[in-house]
Length: 260
Length: 154
Image 1 (cartoon, helix red, strand yellow):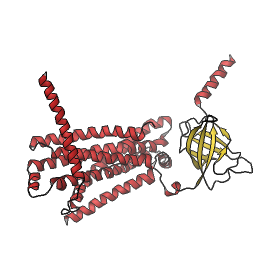
Image 2: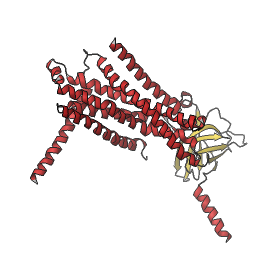
Image 3: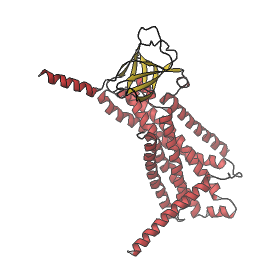
């Protein structure tokens, strides 16, 4: 019994310490003087790896999700003779929820896991320790560019996802199912509001970007430096980030679109 | 040059994000500089029941949109709903005996305010009130009336 209590307390302390390490890492990596010797090249290269490489999976999934939404929405709306509201249905679903959330989940799988594995391997092969030895701060050199790249890329990817998905919806709804293009667009424009829908969706994407890259970077930096430890860390990144994205999404939705 | 290529691609990526945001703003949410800066004047109307009317609903004359509802609140003196509307400045021929009615676009459509212009010589100024109003048609009330009248026949 006492043993059990001891273990429970130990685990609680471990969790608290983990959060503490993550918080300190985030704070130290995000702020402070930029590494002038390295220049902006570090951030650019990370933007390239984290953002540009994720573009294809985001764009393809966007088209497919837009097409599915249009098809599903059409089959329901046509029963009420309200298929003209398809544009409104698709765009509000995408801008408010689907766009940021699905883009973030794809981003976790595509970029988050890669960042964790990369940093974990750097740690396992003592590259981070070597950097410290020659007087380069790995927080600045390795962590900060990846963190910022994730925070910058995520909203861009989410907006691209939304745009492409709406095109996919147009392709299915207007070109294939024959919803009138004029009423599709005008219905959309009448109901979607820039501040309420587009900007709130973008804010969500920024928050998801912070959460996802933070978790990915921390798991890599905190990984047990063995091959098994890296694989555990990568798995944890995907699981924790996905759960965090969905939980944050509910919170943000309640704050942004909740009953006033 | 390797880093030059990265610079160009990352720049294109960021520009793509901006294009996407612009597309969402202009094409999807219908944001335009013209409609935001449109000059309007305010007219108030009191209704017994606004039904499902919400702010940003359309105000139209003969089906043509001439403004939108900016606020709806309860007037504590008369205990009626006060609907504040912003009407385009170029529509300066609303007479003081105009009738404002809340109507529904289609069966499932949104509710909007329809204004019928009368024949009085005075026109509505900024801040004036439309006295003649017609409340929203509440379906439950209508069904209730039909049911009671059917009951009366027996």
